[in-house]
Image (cartoon, rainbow, N blue to C red; front, side, top):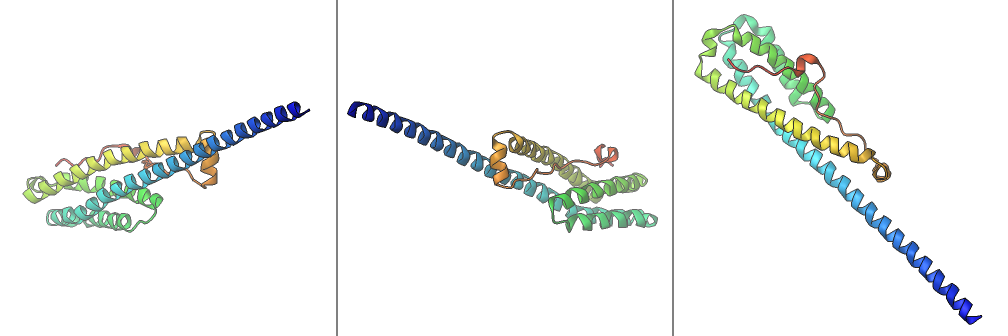
Length: 196
């Protein structure tokens, strides 16, 4: 009888140890998954903050370009005012979604601005204008690269968030799908022409 009791006790201890081991493994996996989401969310925020830096450079450069063009294109004031208005709206956007929308509007305004600038050959020869145009082209290139990087991080985050069983941890963290920095129209998908 003692032998039976001790065998049952050993089995009970072994089952208890196995259950405890499974719980510890699941707990470690859960902590690892949560920490992974925190790292991905922080990487997304850092990548968007970098986009913000390039957008700020862009916003700061645009008034200088507009002032340079004003002297040559006095009768194009509506286009120039639209560029400044789009720049001001973009600079005052607060949320990620607002910044993405405002950037799309600013890109369209810059396209119109570039068309105006192309009408004035003497403007295209102006050294200040050429320098500002080169700076804008450089910023546009850097922005495009940073948008791609940000979107790659968003894709990874959104995929991991939706995959089972990590979706359970994501649900417990109340994580929402991160927005892509996407262009909304076919016109916006075209390259910004900044060569003069």
